[in-house]
Amino acid sequence: MHSTITRLSRRALPAVAAAALLASCTSTGGSTDAASTAAPATASAPASTDPAAPAPTPTATPTPTPTVKPTGQADPALQAFYGQKLAWAACKDDPATTKTDESAVQCATLKVPLDYADPSSGETLDVAVARIPAARPEQRTGSLLVNPGGPGGTGVGMVQRGQKDYDGPLHDHFDVVGFDPRGVGGTSPVKCLDDKARDAWISTDAPGADHGKLLADACQAKYAKLLPFVGTRNTARDMDVLRGALGDPKLNYMGLSYGTYLGSVYAEEFPDRTGRLVLDGASDRSTSLVQHNIEQYIGFERSFKLFATGCVTKSPCPLGKDPEAAPKKLADFLDGLKDKPLTTTDGRKVTATAAWNGVIDSLNDEQSYADLRTVLTMAMNQGKGDYLMGLADGATGRDQKGGYKVSADAYTAVHCADTVMAPTEAELQAQLAELAAKAPLVTAHNPAAALFDPDCRSWPFRSAEKPHPIKAEGSAPIVVVGSTGDAATPYAWSERLAGSLAQGVLLTREGEGHTAYGRSACIRDAVHSYLVDGTVPAAGTRCATDPAR
Image (tube, rainbow, N blue to C red; front, side, top):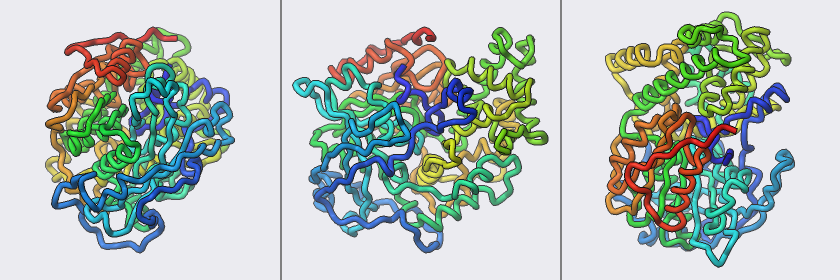
C-alpha cells in the first residue's frame, strides 16, 4: 500500500497504525517537521528577511490582496524569482527515522516574495523543497509536484519518507518534487502555543468563549507579519515560481485532500500553465467553511455508524451484539469521558475531545478498523486509556516526547487566511440544528467545535477570498478522483469540483477510506496513464478497491 501519500487524516497528519500503538502505548504522530531536514542551499534571488520572527502585535487589518491579478513570470518584478537556480544537495538524514534515509533525497531552497502584491519590497520567504530525481533519465518527462493535504502537511516529508511510494512509472518518468507550503515544516513554520499549553488547549472538554481567541492572540503575537500571506492563493503562486525554477513549461501535479484545493486554485490562477493535474479526495470550497465542516461531519457520522455496526460481528468488540444499538453505545462511552476521563500510565487524561479526535481520525482507513476495535475494547472493558490516547496523539500530531508538529497551527493559519467567517445568530442556530439532525452522534460532545473547525472568528486578519466554484477556463484536463466512502472528503465534493472545472474529469473509486490512489490498482493505473502518457480516463470510469491485506 502506498501508505505515505494516502494514509491522511482530514488535517493531513499521517494516520497512525494502531498495531504500532499497541507496541509502544503512544503515537509517533507521523512525519517529523522538515525544518531541520533541508540541506543549506542558495538561490539567485533577492535577499531574505524572515517574517516568521516575533513581531509586535498590530491592529487587526484585512488580508492584503492585489488589486490587479499578477501576471506571474511575465511580471518584471517577479522575473528574478522565476529565473533562480536551485542549489540541490543531499537532505540531512533524520536519525529518528531508522527505516528511511533522507539523505537519499535532494533538498534545496526556493526564494519567493512575501507579498505578491508588492514583490519589489525586498521581503521574501525561503520555501523548503525536496526531490527524488527520475529513475530513468532517458524517459524523463519533467517534474511532478506533490502535496499531502492539510493544510499543514509537509511535502518535503512526504517525499523524504515516502521514497518507495513512487516506484514505477512515476519515479521512472518524473523528478518527484515536494515542498513545504507557507507556514509549514521548513517554510517559516507557524507554531503559536508551546507544547504544554497545546496539551490543555487541544483536549479540553469545556472550551470557554475565548478558546479560539487564545490561539489567535498567540499566533498574532508571534507571526503578525507572516499571517496575512499564508493563504492558499499565495502558495499556489509559489508553486508557479517553483515550476519556473525547475524549468518546466507547465505544472504536473498530484494533490491529496486539501492538496486538491491548492491544485484547483493553481489552475484558476494559471490555467494556461496547467499540465497534467490529478486531484485525489477533493476538498470543494464552493461553500463557506462552516457548511464545508457540516458536510464533512455528516460523512464522519456515516463512517462512525458503519464501523460500530460492523464491530458487533467481529472479535474483539466492546459494543455488544446489537448492530442498531452499537453506534449509540460507542458515542455514549466517548461522551461519558467528559465526566469520567480515563487516565494513562503517565498521568494524562483521556478526555472526550481527545478520544473523539482519535476515533474519527481512525475512520479514514477501513483497514485500521481491527486495531480500533482492540483499542476500544481495552478502553471500554479494561479501563486502559493509553492506546486510545495514542490514537488521539496521532490525530493531533503529538510525538512520544510530548512535542507537537507545526501542522496543527498551520491548519488554522491557512484556513483563516482563506476564510470569511461571520455567521449571523440566525445562521448559527440553523447550522447547529442541521448538525443535530444529520450528525448527532459525532458532534453532540461539542457541536460548536465541529462548526468552527478551525475557529477563525477571532482571527486578526480577514480574507477577501469568497467561496466560489472554480472553473479554470483554458486549463488542460484535470482528473478529479473521488471515493464513494470517503468521510474526510465526501464523494459529493469530488463530483462538485469535477463538475465546476471547465475541463474536469471524474474518476471514481468504490469503497471506504480517505483518498483513492493507494487503495486501488485500477485508480493507480488510470492516474499513471494520465500523468505519464496524457491519456484522460473515460467519462464515468469506476474502480474497485483493492482487497484487504
